[in-house]
Amino acid sequence: MSKEHESNQPVRATLLPYGQQWLDEQDIEAVVKVLRGDFITQGPAIQAFERKVAEYVGAKYAVAFANGTAALHGACFAAEIGQGDEVITTPITFLASSNCVLYQGGTPVFADIDMDTYNVDPAEIESKITERTKAIIAVDFTGQPVEIDRISMLAHDRNLVLIQDAAHSLGATYAGRKIGSCADMTMFSFHPVKHVTTGEGGIITTDNERYYERLLLFRSHGMTREPEKLTRTDGPWYYEMQELGYNYRMTDMQAALGASQMDKLDDFIARRREIAATYNEFFSTLPGLVVPKQYPMAESSWHLYIIRWLPEYFTADRREIFEALRAENIGINVHYIPVYLQPYYKGLGYCSGLCPNAETYYNTAITLPLFPKMMDKDVVDVMTAVKKVYGLFLK
Ligand SMILES: *Cc1c(COP(=O)(O)O)cnc(C)c1O
Image (cartoon, helix red, strand yellow):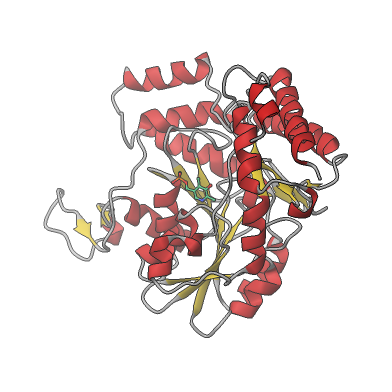
């Protein structure tokens, strides 16, 4: 950092986070109502929330989980991923998108990204398919849907299960279809930085009854009491464990919060789109900065806004640029470190250089604050800080 920069006042006096929930009195009331009632876990609020999400995305079934990671684990179980099975996914994602494969004893295979959208490149997926490939986990990175029509075709032709990690893309559409109704199973997360929150929480939507039944079993110890599913009965108390499941249940307090948050989802997304459009317009006038390209078929719900800083334009590297923006009290971030570069994955034998686009992307990307509760003033602060740091380091 240069001397004159250090002596300058930061653009903001306090840190603006990159993402944050937005809870109102209606949300709080909804949770309190559950607390005053008879059920605080697996009562009626769970089903009401599941129905609400299923209807919103246009899916037949929805199964709520304790978090998005547990939901992905459930999807891998439902898809019967096991030892020796390969599952193709992207390296530019949160760890959970590939950890869920490892939980089931399967092998994640990383396909490189498209440098325009940073989503997995369907041609790269195709090149990684072998006779051991069992499934594809496609991630709608930043909220822009993957090219789901091409990926569905690949999956269909080769009899692969298609799981969509839509943690970023609740409310997004592809060719006019809501995400959540396009893949065999779709996962949404309700972590506080995501579009709507339940504190911790996740859900799988599906049209497939068999997957639905397996997800229900998996969420609760692999156990059932439903008479028509039992292999025998010792009496009315009888329950049976038919699979090795977990306790991955969501509570009623969380589901009530989620249902109340869903009422605001479309407004949240509208505000995210508005901020993204303001950013796009401003940053696209600055040579050396790359704004996120959107494919015409995909309408993003804008979980993340990322700009890339092309190194040849600047006297500083990404780390210095990052630190300078943080010094302005802008809570920027980097999404994500390519998963296979993590020490644990390296220990499994994955090597750097595996996905060159993903690594180039990683070395140049910075995530800017984007959340619906941001005020216009906050948006201006972000643009002012970026412009200031840009001016400081432009060659
Ligand atoms: C948040 C997230 C998850 C996991 O969700 P949790 O609810 O935090 O467990 C999975 N994949 C992606 C891409 C995410 O962003």
